[in-house]
Structure formats: structure tokens, C-alpha cells
View (spheres, rainbow, N blue to C red):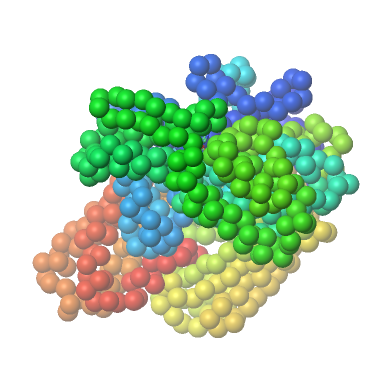
Length: 618
Ligand code: ADP
Ligand code: MG
């Protein structure tokens, strides 16, 4: 084990380089850093403001705009304007199928557990690439404002993000040319911004209430010895300030006796109502009434009416707080502090009801839409070793993971994780009747295992013969305080099990660790694009395998014409697979998928669905 301060402060990167903190939000994103006076400060790139709307627009000539300028296109060019991409990060289509209507742009529907993709024009983007574009814009703004290169960052994620969403966030950072030192929970960052958790002697239980543009979550954290433990989280991923705006819009529609469907068809007017509603909502912070008439429409509402309109929504967030406390097995009296996060906590009714519920004044001294980024900057400063008063915990200097299809590294324990730690993931087979599974364990930051350091390899033998995609193999990594890594693989359907132990730090010097980190930074962009090509190729190969097998088994149910047309699409996909062009591969996968989907539906054959599930290992 090494202390973070040693490993990260060396190499060709200058010691004084700023490390930024980034709040990559669903609605807005922003960057903060520690200024020369040692205080956290948000970055305001001249004239552009602090908050960058998390929106990406693709112009007709392939030009990409991010932020406020992209926001304008939400109404005029919805198909080419991607918003709320954070909701899709690390998610499979199955995860989001219930709310696909929410997106005005095209989310690819391949009915499987593979990761979601977005189609804009005839190009395909992963949520990682889109988030990468937002991060790239943030990086550029920080560089412009600070007049120095920015290469390292701490990025925040909601406490409820799972492993795959966290990994996706890391990859997005990499793609933007950022070395992501750590992924930090948003409530943890908010707490740090209030100085809570900076004193290792103090023990506290806090509630962090985060009401943003479209999402709400509340987290109960226990802080002990400088370690933040999430005791419970609760919330609603479709409740936020946008709902307050819609409530006002609906009220005006009724008061002005407008026809809702006609109005929605008139994009310009619909957008004006929405903007006016947001303005009114914000104005209630300092006035109790708004009243304006434009083009025969009255934009009139008073604060009392507004509060009545949003009361049920706010009540719902209070119920979530109640549930979180229940899950954490805590009584309200055991909460030491309540922190308000997210732009929507500026609404006074929200503040009032939360304070009433917890029976204490809430913290809102720090700007609620900046507090997470500010805390992330503090975390970055701690990791840089600039805060000598803070104990640095033992961490893993390099990521630990296994080889998956195409020679890719699948990280199970990311670098800079505190030790001891455990993590795991489920895998499946890629071919029918596969009875052995090779499990190769690697250490390092590169996307291709051949660039990383191999720690061990074993075969999980005796998997009962099943169709591809059926076995469920859980792989668990347990890294104890002495730095011993125990790897356990178990096939859940049969109980077949195997274990090995290695010591990742054995036989590797600090210099070598540093070299590996440096290489990963230099090669980050190439690595991620290679990974995406390999992933596309693997998905394509799997698709060819599945469809060919399906046709063989079920040819009698499919017409001759359909079979030959399918063969044509398969051929085109096979050609794309050799092209090295990931967009082309995705396009052909999509075409083949669209064409063959009715076959599967027709036959109600489970096998094809199952075969497409999960990641596979060779
Ligand atoms: P997210 O974390 O989801 O990216 P933010 O924390 O930036 O979002 O919150 C954005 C929301 O905050 C928007 O709905 C916006 O209208 C709302 N908001 C911003 N300022 C105010 C204000 N003064 N009063 C009420 N709501 C506000
Ligand atoms: Mg937020």
C-alpha cells in the first residue's frame, strides 16, 4: 500500500498543478478549485457563468456545443440536443425502458442488458462519450479561467450510483483527458464544503437533502475517523425543480384558458411559458408576486399559490426523508446536521418544510448549486496531500480487475479505493455449452489488459453445460488491510466455486507504479477509443453469433425471403466488424437488430433474449 500523496505528486506533472473538483450534474455541471488563499472557489469562465447546463447539441455540420448555447436548441432542434445524459450513464436499456419517453432524442432500443446508446443523425454515442463532452467543456473553461493546463480531477456522483455508473463516470473523465483521482459521493462532497468530516476526531450523523432540476435524493451519512459511510439513501429520480416549473405552466394554461395541446405544438410559446415559470419561481426568493402580460397572456402568480401548487411534491421529498431515516434505523433526534444541496432548495417552502421535519435549522450558507463542486475541490486538495492535518488512508495505488472479451480490462476495485475493500460483479458465458471460464486478474490503469500487469489466472471448471448467457458467475474481490487480494468466482446456478489469493504490491516498486500511472494518462484517449471499438466489435460478434444460431434453430418459422435478407444484414455487419469504424458497427448492429426483432417476438423464444444478456468472458 502507498499513501496517495506520494504516488500522485510525482512524474512529469508539476507538483503545483491544480486539481479541480467537478460536479457533473443531471441539469447543471460546474468546476471548482482551491485558490491561492487556500479557499475553495467555483470557476466562472469570463462571461459564461458558473453553471454549465449539462446539455450537448450536435449541429448539421457536426459542430458540437455544450452548455447555455446548447440549451437554446432544446426547443428548436430536440432530436439533436441531448440533455439529462447522467440518467443514462452506466445504464442498460432494461434499466431505462420504463421512462424512455422522457427523452426527446433517440435512445437505442436493443432490448437487452447491454449499455444504452444514443443516436444523433447517423452517429451513435455512448452516454460516456456525451458526458465526456461535457467534462471536456468544463476542463476547457477551467483552463481558460486559470490559464494553466488542468489534467486531474475529482468527480462527484450520487451516493446511490452503482459500480457500473461510477466506472462510466471515470471513463467519461478519461475521454475528456482527465485523470480522475477519485469518484466522490455528492453528499460527502457537500459535507466537506461545510467542513464536516475534516476533523478526524469528530463523529457525526448528518442528512444531506439534494433537490436538483429533475432528481431528488436524501442521504444519511455517518462520519467517523474521517470516513464517510452512507447509512441510507432515498429519493425519486423524477422529481425536481422542473416539476415546480411545470406546475406554474399548467396554472397559467388554466388561468389564460389556453389549449394545452395547441400550446405544446407551438414550441416557441411553450418554451416562453417554461422560462417565465422558472423566472417566477426564482423571483419568489425576494418578492411575493409576479405579474406580467405578453402577447395577451398573463404571467401572473403569487407565492402562496405557488406554494400550494408544489406542496404535494415537497411533501413527497419529506416522505423520502422519513424512509431514509427508517432504513438507517435512526431517530430524527440522532441527526446532528442537515445540509441543503441543489438549486431547488432555494425555494423557501422547501427550506421551511425540511427544517420543520428535522426539527432544526438547516445548513444553506453555502450556495446550494455550488456546494458539491466546492467540496469536490476540497477532496482534491486532500488527495494532493496539501492538507497535512488530514490523515491519508491506505489506498490501492493501481486498479484491480479482470480480463473480459476482446482483451479488455474490467476494473473491479478502482485505484485510490480505501483499504480494506470488497467489490464484485456478475459475468456470463459467451458460447453455448461453455463449461470452463478463464479468469485472469490484472492490475493497472490501461484499458487493454496487455498493457497492464497480470497477477493471477485460473479456470472456473465444471460449469454445467447451458446456453450462452445462462450461467451467472459472480466474481468477488476482497482486498484486506494487509494488501492481500482474495478473488472468488462462483457460478450461482450450480454453486461451482474457486478461489485464489495474491498480493498485488508484491514485486512492484513505487517507481513502476508511477510509471504505470503516467502511461495511463498519456494514453488515456487512445485507450478509451480502442476500448469503445473493441466493445462495439464484441457486441457485433455476439449479435452475429446469436442471430446465426437463431436462424439455424428456427428456420422453419422464418420465410426464405427473410432469411436471405437477414443474411445480407449479417454480411454487412461482418464487414463493418473488420472496418475499425465503431459508428459503422453500431449502425449495422442496429439495422440487424431492428430487422430480426420481430422474429424473436414472433417465436417468443427466450433463448435469444437470454443469449444477449450480460457481459461475457471468453
Ligand atoms: P442538478 O443537480 O440536477 O444538476 P441543480 O442543483 O443545478 O441541478 O438545480 C437546478 C434546479 O434548481 C433548476 O430546476 C432550477 O430552476 C432550480 N433553481 C435555481 N435557482 C433557483 C432559485 N433561486 N429558486 C428556486 N429554484 C432554483
Ligand atoms: Mg446536483
